[in-house]
Amino acid sequence: MIKILIIDDHDIVRFALKSLIQVGRAGLTVDTEASLATGLASITRLRPDLVVCDMSLSDSKGLDTMRAVVSAQDSRPVLMLSMHDEMIYAEQALALGVKGYLMKERAQELLLPAIDELLNGNVWVSPQVNTYLLNRMMKRQNKQGTLRQDKQISHLSQRELEVLEKIGAGKATKEIAFDLGLSPRTVDIHRANIKKKLQLKSSAEIFAFALTRT
Image (cartoon, rainbow, N blue to C red):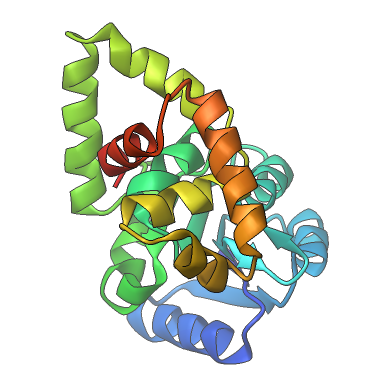
């Protein structure tokens, strides 16, 4: 019997995902947990064949969540679910050892195909991300600047990535602050850190860079 563990801090989401899997695929057992802490304990106890985990939990968020779950799962696959823009975070997730990245808004449509791929030992991302990554791989063969860009963005923190995503969406400082629950001053500090880490000279260059990641 194949074991799947779902980690999500919303009751209705856990119920919906579990129902979707059990109705759509026979021969799977599904357990659920509501936090990273209990989820990690269940990974150790159950050794699930696959973990489906929300990227933003009440007790952990973003890259920290990915690192913890991937480490606990050892070589077994992890599928991350997220509300965050996949064009920014999917590549980060794959670099950390996550085997699949799925936007929550498309879970009903794509969850089962993603699970099938991961249980078969493959990596899964949406068709859009797959095309994007293939294009980037081709460009790397011709442009060393892309390699430099990847190295730079890897230095950004989780919050800085979130701010960069909002900048790429064309949002102003006050809008970003509202969306992320921050003060405008804190957003400006993150913007300054992004500018320094990416070696950019102006807000216009930050926006242009952000557009290449969205």
